[in-house]
Length: 259
Image (cartoon, rainbow, N blue to C red; front, side, top):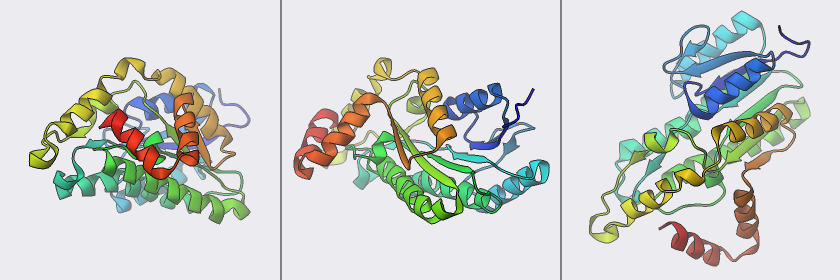
């Protein structure tokens, strides 16, 4: 039974991982959730967030059903690794379209009918805060998400619409397995892209549990009081170091750890 403060919540990327867990938490607390994913089944809506016209149609359907959207969470995304110089251009474009333009499509379409007191949430990444070698395109796409969120935070503040970007670190989901990986380093990089990917993938057992991460993200997305939230203590520490260390030193240390 829905409570008196029941919200209408739209979440993209609900077929698995963070999106699915968030949808379950919101529904548990009596909120109406509409999940968006390419494989969604009714009452959720099947849509590719990179298709602006399709997203516009899906959001129109939500407004027809419920008359409002109280919270929109742009969560859908994917990973890409490899030597930037050697990545196929179609993969670079696909990464940008999914992680950045897909999030922007959803938020822009949803905002049309959102009113004072509503929440706009971007699920970004700790990689938006500091670059990683052989993850440059993923980091760039998530950094773009943060900048869009910060800009919207300023633009919508006077309207009473709250905007947050939530940056989680490594979480135990199928994200790693689904990442598009290019291991070929050619003559310039050799085995470095593969070794970097193996090193990061080998930390799976050290990652935050999906349940723990989802609960933190749920709390932050429901409050939506700050423009930026970082999920994971070590990522908060790294973000602090990024601000106090000389840029060259921080990049050199990061390269040593992850290259």
